Length: 443
Length: 145
Image (cartoon, rainbow over all chains, first blue to last red):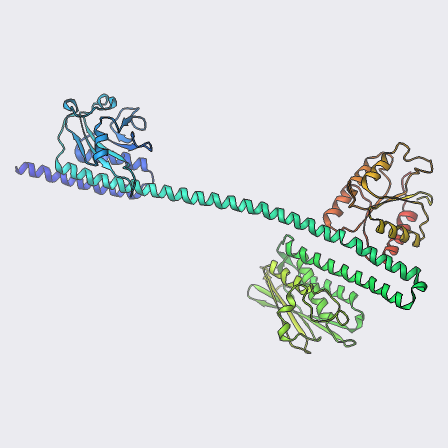
């Protein structure tokens, strides 16, 4: 009795050690087959046998395939099948959910055994169910086989049940992981599909817009040219017949056609700024400002009235070359435009370094903008003045706003009526920091 | 270029055609002008068995003024045909279009255009442009025989 107790104690210890070892492995390994094979080896160790296997129930609900095992000849693991609906001990275990023990297969009359079991020398077997996840069929059966007939004690069975449950938990963890991978994979595929679809749609829309812009630039101008051209012919060749009033009307046709052309040009420019590819590169602010100042000088009615002061340094900025030039030109054009007739036009351009941004100011001493209008003026076609006082299309500042936004920048204005306006744009600084490419003093 | 060599104007818009012909006259260009209204007719003109000859109906043109957007066959195709034709391949072609699209400009030069002009809005500017065409392409430029 004392010896029996002792044996029992050491067996229990061995079983506990196996449970602990298996627990560690199950948590560490990311290979289910490795875990299942090791589980078979360990369970054999715990129960003093070198023959064990895990059979997995297939999706058809009736076929069991040996998924992992130790002690078997080739052609068993991954191959051998057992019919769970036939008169087998496995089928019985699955149907009842209870452990099923065959202490001596040779003397067993209740069940039929698959030939590979006999061929591999198995004489006894204990079946314990490995349950599936919640609301799922069993994963399969843990089978401890023996090459000699043997009894399995209630302690053995209790151990096997605990061990099988641990296996079940491990298997379920892998199943959940697989599902998640599958789900996120499906989700990613669906997303990719959606993105691809939208890219195609976007490309189509862009192509249509391109065609539209082309049509506008091409077809809308033709009738305008005709209006302007023929009205001008009337003025030039039929002036006498038209008389003063007729001549005035013909001139109105000419100027209206020209204004329409300006609108088309600005709309095209705006659409280009909105949709063109933006390439942010280091831009020489000083050079761009100098160039724009030259342009303005040529466009104002009386260049002697224009005094432009550029304060160095104007640090380089990260911007798209074409858009940046357009933005600077538009700001300077506005600065030179909104002045009272006959007074000098003073424009100051300076820059501030703000951490990793550069703010460029374009300031004038012109008529200024009332606070209530300061937000609106950046909208497309927004105008505060009649054509007679300050002609324009109302697109210039919309181009500035859209342009700087496309270059990851911001813009704004500080102004009050009668005290000039200070427009600013803020763009990314370059790594080179404050180095100005060119000194441009008072011009 | 010979004063008597005709200018061939390929232009589908009759308004534009009339304004351009008038601007040519205002610029004192006295060469005969053949106006062709679409791309197919331009191709038929180029491929006519009598073209070019000394017969008064098909003299060798001295200059093509070519619009790009034409019904049926585009100006690009006409330009290609001019350059592919052994008898016309060296005749200067000046594109005269309302398109200022970079892609059109590039393609025109790629296909062998000699000059690219955009139709000005202003009738006065059109006359100035034709004066320049006269000064450069008709009087200054040496054409291949």
